[in-house]
Amino acid sequence: MRSNAVPAPAVLDAFGVKGSAVPLAGGQGRSVLVGGFVFKPAEGTDEEVEWATSLFEKLASDSGFRVPLPLRAADGRSVVDGWTASEFLTGQPGPEGHWTGVLSAGRALHNALRDVPRPEFLDRHVHPWAVADRVAWGEQDIDVIDDLAAPFSTLQELRRPVTQDAAQLIHGDLTGNVLFAPDQVPVVIDFSPYWRPPGFAEAIVVADGLLWFDLPTDLLAAGSDHLDWPQMLVRALIFRLVAHSESAGPLGRAHSGEPARYARAAEVVVRQLATL
Image (tube, rainbow, N blue to C red; front, side, top):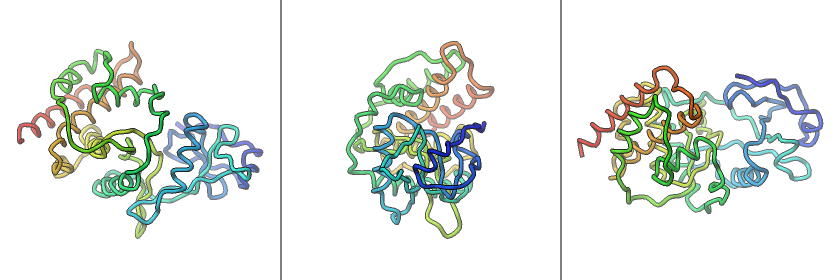
């Protein structure tokens, strides 16, 4: 659903941009294109936005991925009256038809992020996906809505400790946030920071494919060179399930067909574990 909100003239002046606002698809319907730049409401505190702006300014753009270069205001601010801006890069979002491209771009991004220190603000996040991440890794206990209780119990029983791959900064929502254009390096957008092994980010992509897309069967084993891959899939499914539950609220209901989706995906992972 698109928002009617647009940056005020004073915001555009601060960023040195002129033009009319054109709504953009995606990004929760809150982004607009003005004068070749994408404007959207800031997500998180000013500290978090400044951190993300500085990070994207430093990321290499010739290592298997690109990121939109943030635009700063004339006085150096990354946020003006609640708005941020960045360059507009074209491309069609994956993952359908681009599964391997999504995974490859993610691997390149995570390689570039390997030495970035853990941001302290991650500990303060309490949104549904942050809660889901902690539950997936056994750091928090919650009760999910009744509709999802059965597949949640199955997935919890499948979860085992993992030992491989040190945690680092990852993008936890790559699936629909990699753009592809002919003869261009993929563009990674809408960075969702988490502190987990990179294999978890790949497992989320595969879990999304199991849940909502026609995932190519060979990609089920995308990370099978790691002994912990099936456990990453278990955690990825818990992550998506709990986020759905948290977004619904304690008295909410799952979307139609969702409990069956999670049950089927759990069965696939059970079969994957049985092959080991």
